[in-house]
Length: 173
Image (cartoon, rainbow, N blue to C red; front, side, top):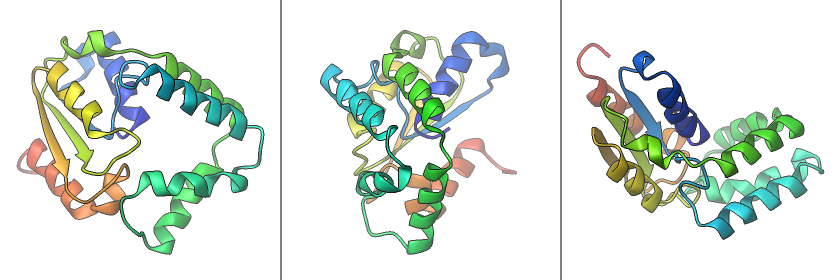
């Protein structure tokens, strides 16, 4: 799971650990409250609340520099813009408010399945200290920092990203 999805995966594990054989999380959090300073959580939430009142075309591009560590091809940026444009403001605000309030740090020590944590070296959205805290909290975890990339590790270094996942999952993947 990537970004917010990593937090969702931890929450699923909390409720249904019997369903989970392994976890893979990239650029993940233990909820914003569980991973970031209170003032950063508040700033992110305020920003989203303001932007949800405006058309996505007015604010989408302001996020792109925080997603990538290097210049990306136009087609990749257009794909990200398209995904972000499809988000509905009410749903986005509800999801981000819940994620801002989430603190899943107490769950981390209960995760006993093999866990791969991937982090971009230059990720400013879920910085390395967030990945290191997840790694310290999850006993069966492995942390891999992907060099030269930001938050969208899967788009900036797809070959390396996929290779790490295949290595973790083992032969036959």
